[in-house]
Image (spheres, rainbow, N blue to C red):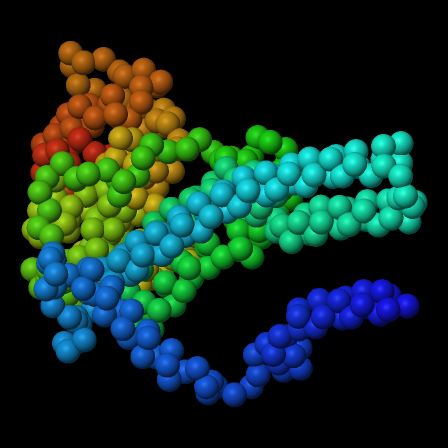
Length: 443
């Protein structure tokens, strides 16, 4: 009887240990209805200390005496660099967690093997044929004890310890990469945005997020088969048509020309002529570079003032948008406004290997489509003796010299003076709307 009471007491203690004060509060109230929390004050102080450390990491100084940022007002462009420093810190903590998961997985396999070996030895020692005086009840108790040990270790293992570790790493690495690329398109200009961005990035490495991504990936696999996996991020979103992956995006390639890197929080008024109602907080250098990459500005001009960027802006404003309702958000004035900025930041970088301006990227789906037969047919309307017609199978890049020749021939006709815009080299080799309109109107 005493043994039964002891077992019941142990079970009660185990169940009670799983009930913490947070369990009771969350069960009754959820997160509550009061904005104030008793942890708000210390959390604010710790947050400010952490952001100051990130600011020092983002500052263009090295050494033990890097100045603190706590006594100065940060300019809007500084917050983007602080976010980058914060994501680096989170990456280090996340990598440590992934390494711990891998080690625990290895340790658990060894522990289970050791339990099995000990049980085999105990079974041999308690075999009634070898040892005497051991009752069937004792044998059953020993078996139950080892079964309890094995099942307990299996039960406390989460999904992340049971699933293949390469799957966990793949989910985390892909989501971290996609998040970083998305953040580069944001204009982070204040402290609340920094905190929200870093908390969102931190969630990627949380066990519940990793488990949810793995579960959603399994669901997609079961619904669509193995062909889809690996061709889209493991985010559980509905699976759409699979298209060939484009070449590396321009953001992932090093610029061929020098880029004038800004100091922390530096304003760049030399870029003001490109924008309507220029506000440096809305157009930090990082955002300007993103806009240039979307517009297909040549790599040697990315990050630099002047150049041909205004011409690429004009081509964008003359191009029909998809969906059509976005056309109402575009003003054909040769300057980027806030609405146009948001439209551009929602698109991927220009695939410069296949297209060279925004009009081309719209026609050829940023290089995913390669059929240029309709353009070749239009170019063949202009006869250039002794040159013959181009084959309709000619790709766009192979027809660029002919584009420049046709543009020059049409420019010599005064009737086209008001319709055909003067394009500097090498833009004369690009397919543009003004050239297309003239060729379409020709018999």
